[in-house]
Length: 200
Image 1: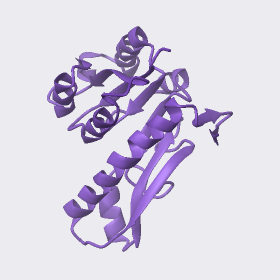
Image 2: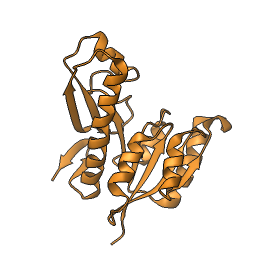
Image 3: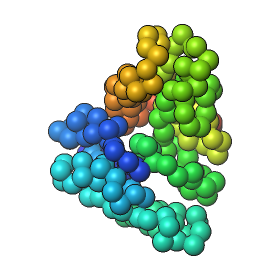
Image 4: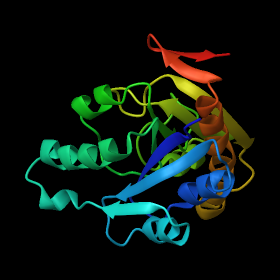
């Protein structure tokens, strides 16, 4: 039986990537095929190298258009034929062409309880609004900003006014929930069908 192949796109530190590596590096049914970053100094590339995972740096600044950049991205992805493309801190907005190509096979994690607080600075918004709860959302990617059908959410009570501490607490949640959702998708327990999340 062929393993379920993951391709992971990053732009930075790669802490979610590390959580995924830790969860699946000895799993014979789920394989991290490649890691791709649009930032040369992304520490996630080092994490991938340390785990003997193929990794690539593609500088979006080298391409005249998003289409050209994504064509290169797709050419690398297609050489691995991933079953799931995982966005783990990938700081580029993807075009409709890219999203449609991988629709149902493309997931993202966002540090808020969507549909609340799309975009950036979610932790600051939570504190500014004195929210009682904060959390994370894993969702299938569609052609809306931080939209798409929700796979799972996890939340914690807000018990600090310290921005860095809150961000750290949310990262811990991310490192638990993201590998869990990937496991469910890989084992056919969760999928996207006709625009809706289906669980079995």
